[in-house]
Length: 461
Image (cartoon, rainbow, N blue to C red; front, top):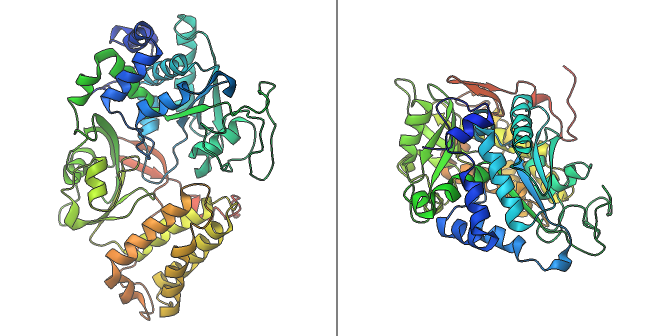
């Protein structure tokens, strides 16, 4: 494997000695059009969760007319989905491949500036990324555009690409209506959010959309290797529809929660064993949650290939390849409540059905988990699941719909058991797996998260 080195690379000299920099050399030799063609031929898909073809995305930005204004590249390292730690692992072990990928992207699409975004609480990762940028600049490998590191808020929506542009411009992480290729950084037209532009530095072009390329940390790390070794080399890993490898996170009821690089197409069962060391003796998998963005995977699907097409075939998705494993002692109603509470708290409130609906779903799931719910509560949950996505400007409400809805269907018997039970048949005190640290087989979760309130403040202790 190639994304996670066995020991961290801590200097540019070590990175170059290990073959780093060859991707940038190849991109400059090929030129923008051929670089995009090579990425397209590789089949690389975005590793931030959406899986959009990377070559097509770059071509869309590069193909914008000259009158579209300035172009920008944004690197998304603001991971905040429960059960995911892969971007932080990449930045800790080899930030240079991310910077190289960002420079290649900027030169290919003709960007005037690069913004590397991660949360302010990611201090270790920010230090590593800052060092890598400075060394690239000192070596003359990063020229022609300005590189800015943005330390943003801890909110989940900071990782949503349209909200990330707002943060770069100095505003809260409230998603815009239009995608970055239609309404990019410092664009002068109204943003259709709580406030209209123009805002930010004096670099706007009147009436221009300023097309902006947003890629995840892992996506850009792959770019450097693909251009150095070729599309055919990349396609020697994975499957035809899901080439390459992925950095997987496995947490929950496993022996040793961890992050590991796996070849796409590997069965989910094997990923759980290889990355998380399997389950303790006597325990079995009840369900696997691919973060909080996709439907739950039940135990009868553990041999599904970890690939875009594999998970799609069972009605789910691999997302950012972060897996929360629940063993046979878990309460799935409690699991639905934890996911719903996270999403209801992190909802920004710009779309009332999302905030109101997810909050109402969470409250009624809480009653169900406590054994005090009625059939009316279950009906209300289902009703809100149908309406929670009305007018949504980001994917959060869809996540609520897909995750909670899938658990209610797959574990309908457990839902029925809770009705009038006077308490949960299988009490479950598992934490919300919002990861603060993941190292040496030990996961540290945010113990304060249960105090976070819907207005993004924290209740006093």
